[in-house]
Image (cartoon, rainbow, N blue to C red; front, top):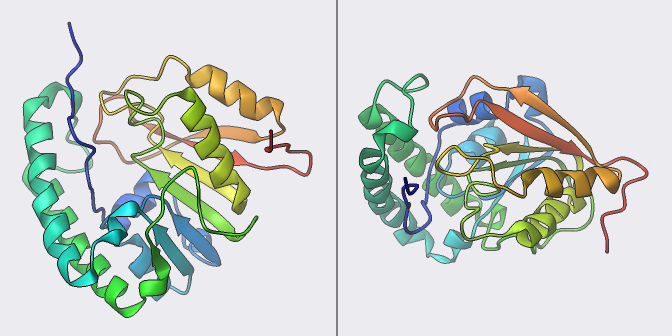
Length: 234
């Protein structure tokens, strides 16, 4: 049976509570320089800043002018609803009771994100993987949700090698990735090969079970970290 197709990539906006759950974040994690890539309309960058972190979000959607951003992101929630309702067997309602509660939380996050972007535009950069405009080891922690691995039907193994290497390049601590499946809950065929390539280059990895789940089978995050012996350049 053919897998459902999502169509255009989703533009999403998650609240801080989702980030804490997806990435098993503690208060001690939310400090120093933190990158959210891709940030979309998420509230994390704003709320992490309010907690004292030097937080930055990257997403090509930030090419949209600040005064049109909230409206654009809110309109994108229609696509999210259509996708969820078209493939109900792919989703589980443990983190949220239903699709209305999920989307209401995301719409609330958009307002927080848009206000912070207006106040701190230098912390919302229009860029995309695998080419980030930051120096080596600039961030203490990088968070990446619902891009890497999620769109394996349009980003191949080589793109993922480059994207993961770039996230590691700009980070001197953890790179945390959620989920580690595609948008249908399946692990990409080339996943083990890509991860083995990183391990061979001296990158440490571990899996952490998390308390967040919307997509079936998405119950863990991947944590990557460079070592002094990592060799990420070709």
